[in-house]
Image (tube, rainbow over all chains, first blue to last red; front, side, top):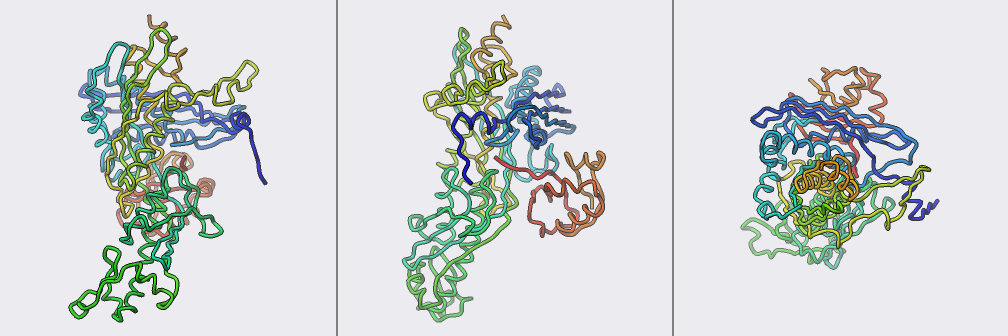
Length: 469
Length: 80
């Protein structure tokens, strides 16, 4: 069955993300240490109950080391279409509330907002607000990187303000499988079951090349399907490179065992004496010193005579995904006559665990930040008095385009995830979390009004400015 | 061993912060939870994740639970 919706029907029927109403209370000592934190979160689920409130409650305080913490969340059902999320479900709303309040507390104490967050940041050994104890994590390093970032030194002009905020997302793995086929021409064909959301095929090809010790150019990665490859869970939860990467590593190691066995036949030596190094089978031991190494291509060319096709495969439940933290810096200029906000500079600093393909990791950082910026400044569903959606199209539902945003600077930190052979953490979702508060804090510093309602559209900011006069 | 409870799992057991239960693997743990706490049945059906020493497991039920490990039951987290 095929269901086709027009753009307008998509807007009307498939749901925006939840609207929310959140109350935050933070208690802190004069030295800046937070003693207690309370969040009461209300998530509007549309007509169908979900777990949106629960996710907000779990993520709200995740960046901090808190001796006393409580989150109470409600999923509220209303007569509206279902809701959905694109990245980090429920976390951006919770972070907007928490990070705005953190800034308020820091200001009340006369502390620099970055230093206040550093003092209270979670670290390895901290019991997370949602339950488990953290292993090695990146929130502290991202905050240190904010302090040292060149953007923090740029002088600001009239009606300009700087804000920063932190964000967190869990990430996860899931059921994953991969096949690595060695062609008789020496090329490597990798099949995966995760969709290429943001360049993951290139990263996965790099992983295969690394494991096999062959040039990247000889590796081709294809996205297969359940009929040809096997079951893979849906591509979500920032799992593509993490989980398919894990499966490819083990599939390649499986293939290497077969390559060693074929090389042993070709060299006429015991397979235990054959090692795989830099893309070659090498017979170790002085008794084999006369034997030349065999490349993958040489072994592949002879594969018809040594046992047939050479392949490796792996099926894995890729648990052990590492959490990812980010800290963002935002400079804005607000026109006090119109309430229009222009983002002057924006920086994303996020822990990637191990950035296999830095350009694509950067792309994920920037894409997530752009979505968060749009959410913070412009994107909302507008309903008429008759209850019907008034802006079911991209002309009036305004997402940021290239001309709206400055170049988003990125800094990739690498605190390896012990749950992955290469230390990879998922990166795609976390950076949608901080922008709402980063911009809210920047607007507050620019024009002296605290925005508590997103989007911080020109009418809302102008109204707040006028109300404050 | 002590198993910490969070979120709706804690609510389902009347607000208990932890329980004492013996299990050598996640599979054994899930089975014993189902046997001992019928109130958890809906949550077990929906999916519960287990964090062992900070590492979160959603599906790898064969995972061994080391002695003296920190064990936390959490809701199963989806992604975007």
